[in-house]
Amino acid sequence: MRKLIPVTIAVLAGLSAGALAAANQEIHQKGRVFSSENVTLKKGDALTFINDDSIPHNIMSASKGNEFNLGSQAPGAATDVTFKEAGDVQVICAIHPRMKMMVKVTD
Ligand SMILES: [Cu+2]
Image (cartoon, rainbow, N blue to C red; front, side, top):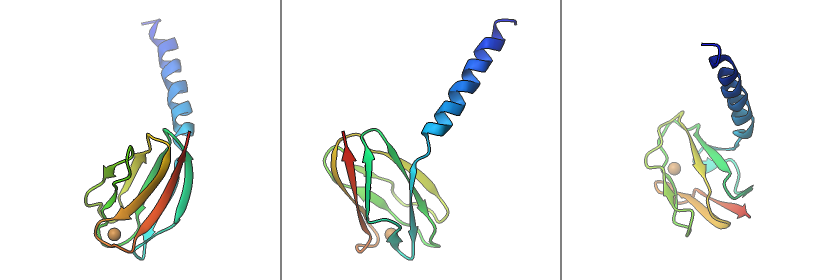
C-alpha cells in the first residue's frame, strides 16, 4: 500500500502537465464560417474544432500527410485534430463549400 502514494503523486503531476500542454488553439464554426482563416501551429500540435452552429458541419482535409475527415459534427460538439506533417493544410467543410481555412504546420 505504501508504494502507491508516490505513484499517485506522479500520475497527478503528469495529468496537470498534460492539461497545460493541451491548451489547443480553438477554431469555432459559427454562421457557416470558420473563426480564423489562417492558423499556424507546430507539427504534432492539435486544433480544437467547435461547432457553435445549430446545424452539423463536416470538417475535412485532403492535404497530403494531414488527411482527416471528422464526418458529421453535431452542434455543440468539440473535436481535436492533430497535425502530423509540416506544410500547408487546406481545411474545408464538406457540406458548405464556402467554409475554408488554411493551417500552416511548421517543423
Ligand atoms: Cu459546414
